[in-house]
Image (cartoon, rainbow, N blue to C red; front, side, top):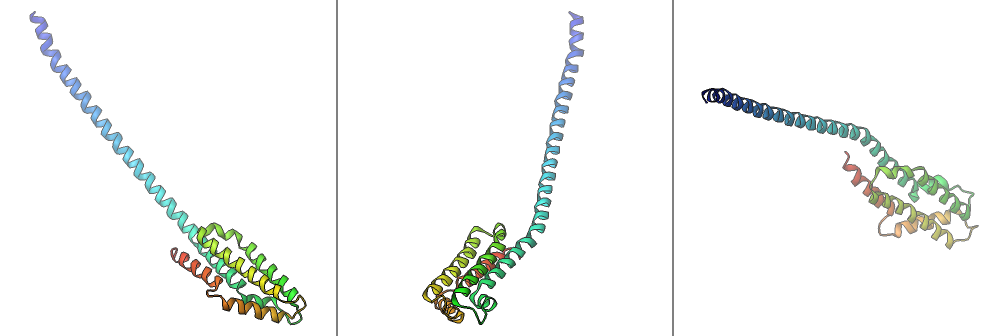
Amino acid sequence: MGTILEILKLTIPGVIVFFTAFYSIKMFLKNDEQKRNEEYKNELTNKEIDYRIQTQNHTTPIKIQAFERLVLFLERINPESLLVRIQSAEMTAGQLHQDLLIAVRAEFEHNLSQQIFVSHKTWLAVKQAKEIMIKTINQEANKLSVNAPASALSEAILRNIIAQNENPIQLAIDILKIEASTFL
């Protein structure tokens, strides 16, 4: 019985030391793994931030260019500039009517892709301004004879736009300016 007692005196402290060392090493490895996971997450977050900044630096000029192009589109379909560009002295109202519609639609089609850079609300305002312009051209052209002078149609279109409470083209430009200011 003395030898068993001697063996237990030596074994029990060894087992206690073993489990203490095992537990300490296990806790150390667990803490080390948590630190590495946190560093990895921070690294990913920093990479995401860098990626977003790079994307923003790349897309912001493109978005601003889209706003510029849409404002230019609206200015080009504004009756004051549209009529000056399209109308000639020998035209009839019918010819001017067709040329105005072709010009407005061509300008719009040329700028269709810009809608991906602006909000849905802003794009609807641009589109609505174009549709109101086409409607105004059609309404005033329908009131005149096809063979009437082009100047009569020009005057009617300008009077119609002036008579409206708010110029739809200017409203769309204002909406574009407001949205563009968020990028500047």
